[in-house]
Structures are given as C-alpha cells and as structure tokens.
Image (cartoon, rainbow, N blue to C red):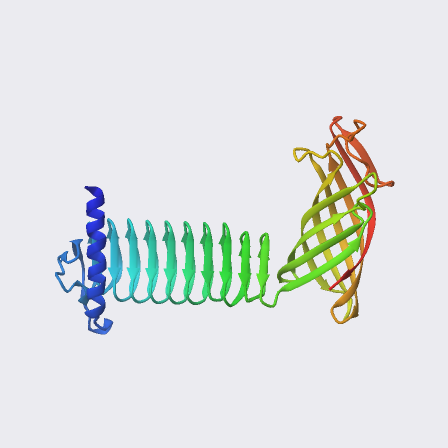
Length: 361
C-alpha cells in the first residue's frame, strides 16, 4: 500500500511538473498567499493552478506544487516550485526548484535547483544545482553544480562543480572543471588549475606539477618516482626501486609519499619529501612489517630544458619484524647507523643518514 501511494505521488509530481512548465507565470505576476495545504497535486487549497501562487507556508501531506515559496514548506514526500524559493524546504524524498533557492533545502533523497543556490542543501543522496552555489552542499553520495561553488561541497562519494572558491571534500572523487582556490580533499582530485592544495591519493590538474625522477640509493640501488599534484606546493609521489637481482641481499620495494617544492634561487629548487616504502626481500611474508621510511631534502639544479640534477640528503628509518634465514629479526640494510635496536625481541628499528643522486625531468 505504501509503495503504491509513493508511486502514485511520484507520477502525479511528474505530470504536474510538465504542466507547470507549460503554465509558467512570471514571478512578478504571481499571487502571494499566506498558506496552502496539499494532499497530492492538484488536490490542494490552491486548486489546479497552484503554480500561479507564491506561499508563505506550505504543508504537503504527500506532495505539493507552487509558483514559489517565501517562507517554509513541509512535505511528506516531495515539493515542486516552478519559481524561486526564499526560506526552507523539508521533504521526505525530494525538493525541486525551477528558479533560484535562497535559504535551506532538506531532502530525504535529493534537492534539485535549476538556478543558483544560496545557503545550504542537505540531500540524503544528492544535491543538484544548475547555476552557482554560495554556501554549502551536503550530499550522502554526490553534489553536482553546473556553475561555480563559493563555499563548500561535502559528498560521501563525489563532488562536481565548475570553479571552486572554498573546499570540496569527498570520500572518493572531487572534480572541478575550472579553477580551485582553496582545497580538494578526496581519494582522487581533478581540476583545471589549483591555487591551494589537493590532498588525496591521486591529484590531477591540467597545468599541475608533474615530474619523473630516477636516482640511486644505498637501500634500493635503482629508484624511479612519479610526482604529481595540483601544484608544486603539495604533491604525491609513487615510487619503486630494487637492488641488483643476483646479489645475496636482493630487495625490491614500492612506496608512496608527499612532497612540497619551492625556489632557492632563480634556477635551483628544493623539494622536501616524506616517503614510506614496503620492502620485499628473501623469504618475505606479506603479514610481516618490513618498512623503510625516508625524509628527503632534494636540491634540484637545472641541466638543460626540463632535465635537472638532484642531490638529496635523506634520513632513513627501518622498521622490520621480518625474520631472516638465520633467525635474525630484520636485515641490516645499512652498514652504518645512528640507532639500531631490536625492541621487545620482535621489531628492529634502525636509523641512518644517506645521500641520493639522480636525474629529474
């Protein structure tokens, strides 16, 4: 029974919305009424042509439709406004606004605004705005804005906007078709230009920071890293390295890190980076901890075109509870150190300084 009522209500809402668009009246010609009560369109105190009225208060037992709102609207399932909304809408399923919305929208599933939105939107699944947003959007799954966002988007999975002056925070992906002045925080962040920071696993910008570096080190003799971010103020590193395969202490590893880059002079630069490696060696077990953590200060000296020499002092911290063939806890990856202890007879912690030299392009 309940399902039938919801289906009937949705069908009525869709048919009325089509009618409302054909019966649209300019807002200046709409009549203001203090209140209206609706069961489901067109069964309301405003009758068949309810979209010709602006209401100060609307109570929609299932759903309702009007030409605009200047106050508060409470709906069991849905509300349709063909014009502008100034105030607050509360609906069990959805609120739709043909014009602009100024205030707050609370939709159990979705809020849809055809024009601009100023204030806040709270959608159980999504918020959709065709124009500009000035304020905040909170969507359980997604927020989608056709124009700019001046404020913030908080989406459980995704946020999509034109340019952003503020923040996008999502569980998986943030997409800005234009510039981001502020922050994008998510697993994947995409923008055209970033004047701020992107914080995530993968950060992409059309004119962003992208570098490849190849270098040698004492633990992994050959290393390569891809550096990418919205700009050089904050970027991610994906790196891998290995020793020579025929040696007794064959090792390989892969890592992830964060970095920032700034100028030292007109030509030279400095990158400060932190990387965490998972090292694989011998009879390794993926259940064991076998980690190399590095803090790097990379001095970058241009050679020609986009090629540059990198000289990088490092500070290394080994953390390992992997047992070697002879029963030792943790291989000693460096012949010199400033700290080397096995803690609680189960985890080796070793620290030492190092020097990496490489090429960046």
